[in-house]
Image (cartoon, rainbow, N blue to C red; front, side):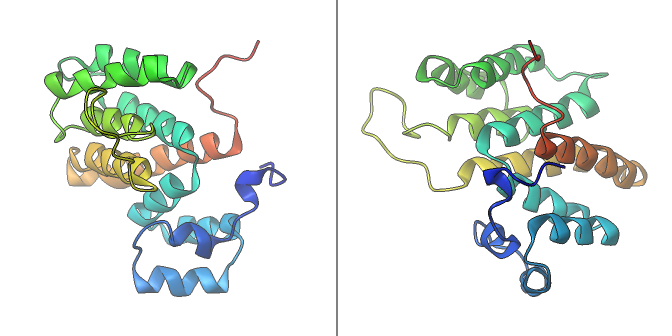
Length: 193
């Protein structure tokens, strides 16, 4: 894992300050300041929900949304929800070109997919990366920091919760493997040229 990138120039404590983890998790982070060591500790403990929260708040927004797309696709592609393909196409367009022209169409996903579905949460996550949470015709309302990460985390947690309890642990492991690949840079939304 390349640890010489700006992504690794942050402590586990700093990442945990981006959201509201349990006091136990905060105490553990003080024992392992390095985020990779901290993550490996969570992996050893198989604390899947904490790993998802930590990864989504560590990854940059685009990377987090990409990981969320991989998770939803991995677990729902055999039985896609209505409009899943269209929503995924809009998200991929935004990932490839994160501009207002590709971000604004993500608002229409609200008309197709409920926020009670992982894909709806991912669309909101990507939308919340922009300068305003408001539609273009309304005054600018800046999204709170790390709102995107919170929505990606909720999406990943929700897609796993939709599985029978007996299948959750093994699927968490697969999704976390995908997340660490995104973190390492070995799983990216663009095809290398």
